Length: 101
Length: 101
DNA sequence: TGAATAGTTCGATGATATTCGAACAATAGG
DNA sequence: CCTATTGTTCGAATATCATCGAACTATTCA
Image (cartoon, rainbow over all chains, first blue to last red; front, side, top):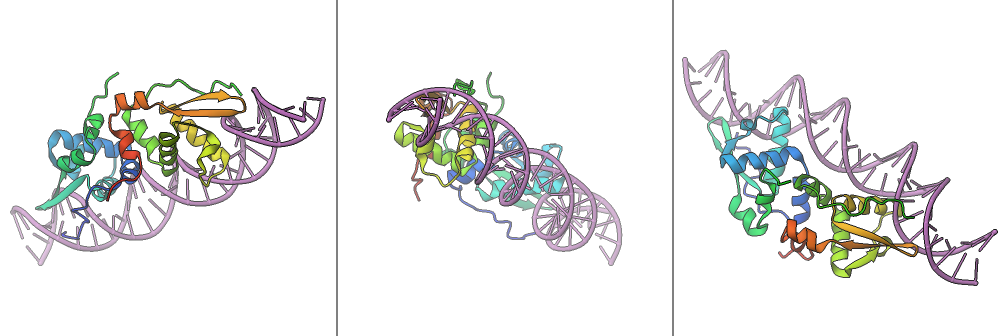
């Protein structure tokens, strides 16, 4: 692959971040990455096609929330916890399930 | 007026909150309310029709971010700073302009 | 070389949201 | 009572976004 992949993006401005987080699938991906630390795209068991999934990962990459490194035929995704916590302290904890009653 | 207005809603779960905040007009409304403390719907000078504006205020009301009280022919909107800060401490500061370079 | 695996990209489709104008409701003031 | 003001509601048009399948790229392994 090695196709630029728009990796290494910095955390985007709030407006774009909220816009990106306003999708249940992307929030699920984030939750999964919070648990697994790292995971290839296909490892989330969400009921969506792989092209859809790829799209969501791209969006998360573009706001700087995840970085991706190729490993064999897989793309290992990694939540940028440090950067997110620096810019938006607390945010990940709000997202993390479960959200109390 | 006095038409129920779905006021007094508690702060919604994160998923719905992010979804609601993923719109530039609504973020602007929030910023304006952060400055003015209180304001009638028409007082935001945004380049959108009043029916559109009414819709956005409704969305913000439904996630419990603003409360509205009728005063004469006007609806005075008030950001629920306390509740928001309790549930999402820091959030309002991220939204408040300007976001540093 | 060839087949299998993992993602990406593209184009099209469908669903959801934003937007607007018009009609309506409620209050204030003459 | 009549009119102006302010916002809500409704319906329709539009734009945006998520989703899918198919074609493609890249890598691994036989």
